[in-house]
Image (cartoon, rainbow over all chains, first blue to last red; front, side, top):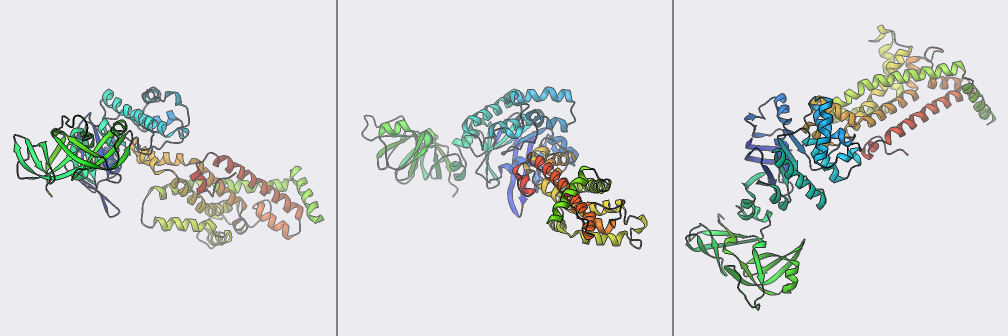
Length: 362
Length: 242
């Protein structure tokens, strides 16, 4: 549906986006994830034709948008709608705000009068139709902005960090709304977020943007469990990044020497090659050495000392020095039951299938 | 002191009894300044919009120049217009010197910079997100401009009212272009200057009270308008009014 090739954008002598190549399919939820300032908003603005790229092309259903005149760009823009991170409401009623896009399209009043309540109902704000929009809360304003976008029945809905300024309850509301719109109207949704969990929850596919470049595109499984580089791994919450060399590989079952110990992992990388190992913290289990059964179903067991414990919502991130640092994510309850503290000696277990191995290209 | 007190009471009497000459001067003042403000608004709002919505080389310098003209002495405007409108001047053929029409022209010229400057500031006070939102919702360039101006309508209205305040209270242009001719071009400010000069204090005080009442009405209107403005827009117009 949208094909982006060699897209770049420079502003104020600074490169904001560089050589973006991407294809977005009709009906999917595509999520851009990346740290703040990585270029996510810029790429959304370029797709919505709000800004002009300094290089490359964006093809919308086969039409080169950059080479088109303003009339064509306007007609393409009218097939999309964008919701901004900080929603701007106009100084009129909620219903008046939602009607703007329809008025701009010269729609009949009777049609506007039937569509606006419909859109407000979808976002659950029908009861506030006659309220002054500027008096709404942040979450309500964001829902008005979504209704205002939906009322035009866009083929593509662009959402820039739609829950960045919202509390968890409102965030959940907006997320379920996004999924419902996608499923119910088959709307293609392109959104940006720096909330990895949100990206994981919503996306069919994810594009990772770091420093203005797309560094990986794939399914949530690809991005979160098979990152292609250290920066992406760190971005998606993988702290454990070990280097080693494949010692043996017997039909995909490899032994990897990481210096102090040997890891068993499932990989196609052949013996003798240098590799990087990524292990998600929730895949690491911790047990005490004196427990009745020191063995778990994990193939890899490493003894180490806890060096750091950091609160992480309902979990605790525990860093264990096993010669190389390993990070585990465990519940507070488990932590207290095991009596873990900095200095405690533990055994970290990791399944061979939980280790993501990629060739280390230096 | 007693002269002032008795002058004050005589002035009240002139107002209450609707003294024809006082009323005629007040009506002419209102007519000229209102006409000048309306014409200036018709020019300043699109001009301010044109400057705000377009990026061009020297835009900043132009805005600074417009802001500088806020405080241009009215006698300087009067002098320049006098030279233009005098019989030997480039606009002499129109015969506007010493006519109410000439005074309207003069006050229009005087008010345009302040109105244009405040319109630019009012439009600049509209959140950038608003125009992005409008474009994203499928607005054409023209629809975007109209809607942003509508968003800034209260601040723009305040700019027009402030322009009217400057017009009705100025004396330089009215004196030099109008000539303070009785029953023809005599307005509140020029009449006050003249009557004070000849020692007719009750008449001057009566006209002064009317001018103050008009100023009071302007402040009340501004208060009503700005009570509906955002904090940002109030700051553009010189801070919130209480």
